[in-house]
Image (cartoon, rainbow, N blue to C red; front, side, top):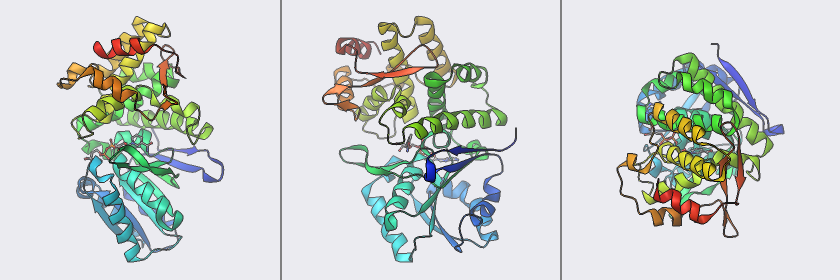
Length: 363
Ligand SMILES: NC(=O)c1ccc[n+]([C@@H]2O[C@H](COP(=O)([O-])OP(=O)(O)OC[C@H]3O[C@@H](n4cnc5c(N)ncnc54)[C@H](O)[C@@H]3O)[C@@H](O)[C@H]2O)c1
């Protein structure tokens, strides 16, 4: 399959998404045609610095662009006020101007943090996402949600700020730990569940042994679905919320583990989506066969489907409590995304808290 270019349509804030192979080695040319400055800021983390930064750096230098490097620690802890503030001050110390471009080279942590830094420097400088995890290629690099964590919760400080370009090179996925790859697949499967039955069926045929062409197809379809929802509802006032299928359950699991990295986001929402289907079965918007197919595909993707898979002894009442403290609570009413069989979903507050309690007890 050839390399692909999509567009996220947001009027004057529209931007292209490039998906394919060998993109990093030619990145300098793309970025040169985008900026007339002879330097660009790169934020990346220590793991990506070692493996993928050299090729990006060389390509930029070959095209007369001097990369100004800012390397952060890998992992969720870097999405902090402390790292944010250090980056801002270091970048300002070097001197920047309105036309400066910031490149976020890394997974969702680097993308969320880098995007927020770009949004606030001089009230907004241009930024380019070069996502290096599957999760960031199919999800976090698209849609403009940027931000960092607070002591009071995840992603509570941030801004909607769209990138100017997204460049997803599938070659970087070869160095990704398999657990991280599976975590990205959880979001991929989600797109099939909320929007595209055919995509779900296709995933079933490839998910246990994904080849390069499949990766391009998977990233393309995922980005298209996300881009479409974002174009219709940039600030998540309506349909964009469908992207949260399984997330309210998943966030409760992540909060229980203090976001300490023992459980990856994709693992938590994988269980969360199974639980959303269990609610669907109770409400008769999904049937037992749908539920079984959902469990099977997560298993094929080497993802957990029940709490006991995580090897943690959860207090189920606490999970219920955390769920009701999620951002998706409005005027004390919890909203959930629930399935309409496979390939469609809807948002509702119309469910019984006793059913949710029952579901946690049997999760
Ligand atoms: N903005 C959004 O819309 C959105 C959506 C979903 C998730 N997120 C955020 O994304 C973050 C998670 O992103 P993630 O899963 O990409 O995690 P991550 O950025 O922490 O990356 C996972 C690990 O893989 C390493 N890594 C990255 N690329 C690699 C590669 N090619 N080879 C080897 N190792 C590599 C990283 O150093 C890190 O240790 C969370 O903070 C979450 O809140 C944001």
